[in-house]
Image (cartoon, rainbow, N blue to C red):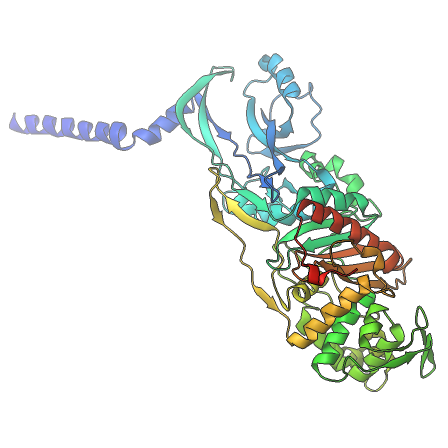
Length: 554
């Protein structure tokens, strides 16, 4: 009897232990299994962070749309879904409007097990005007899958959207939906995890100036910054594209990809062009710093110049000019001769001024430009198979030398700020949903390896380009603000010349550095300089400055 009693007690204890394990320890696991019979988990999509301009204007944010999840064995004859994914046992149709969802609800009995999930839709409110700095988002490719990303998710593909993806992307939540035997929704359980929205990005760009610059630029690039901080104020590459097209699906993207004007090509940070005569500023700075010439050194310009069997021309006859007037009047003959004095090795030292290397802007895939070296020409032509014509051409910003508008901006900003500027950047700071700043991009000091005397001379010469009677940049002159600049016309073997104008203002206390590049525009002084004048005028109307009367030029 005792053995039977002990055996009975043992069985009771085992049963109790098992019940304790099932009902207490493994309660949550079995609850999940049980819920599958009457409830299904549903993702609550998190919105991406907003992108705002420097004055708080929203330029990218999410609006309401819907994702439709249909079981793979559903009858889909009612709808013609061109853009969809297969995820697990569902066919997912992304980012559909309320009208389609309402139509689907009317035929709910024909779509057993259908799920309708609220899904944020990215909207770029200024379209192509901000296309290159912002970039776009699109469906993730399987090669991009990482972490908790899954097929069908959207991910930043270019621009700010890509570079700041980890901040802009939120974290999805979920809830349990109770259904009947036909898969129709009856309600939701109380248990859910709230989605966490992405962080907001506050840009350095002024959207009003951005819009204005885009409107007046025919084709090319305009980029401007605060020379004291490196904050980008304007970032325009034209033609642009509508980034909303990539969110809506591939059928909207085809026209962008086949456009012969290449609207996806960012002409600010990716395109590389000969700088033309604006490069004379760098050549003059290197020559002065190495003491190969003095500002008083004069050369005679007859309008023609020969090197061996090759003949070179200047755009005008400047007679006898010193370095100051050679910059002001953009005399090619002076710089042909100066290039021969410098030689390729010294010209290659312009890399110390920021050419031939990326600026480090907070955008992906920046081009680095190209400054040829002696080794490059030896490899291309053979030792002693090339001569004085090479450095002569390089000295006027032609030949193999290539720069990006962004590199020129960094150089001009450093000159404007007396030799020092900072990494160009588009983001002022990142903020949480309560509006508290939580981070900012790291910027580095960029310092020109030039003496104060050299920088002062170059700045005075730039002032003369715009304000002297014979200056090539007179069309950029403002009545009450001293503008300092340099014109450039770059020869283009594939078509009409490119027009450049680089500048900063005011002379005494610069607030803006600006680069205008008009692709196939023609003469820099006649085409790019007037565009710069309009932008500077608009800038100082919005951000007025108090000029020192001692620095005014009548």
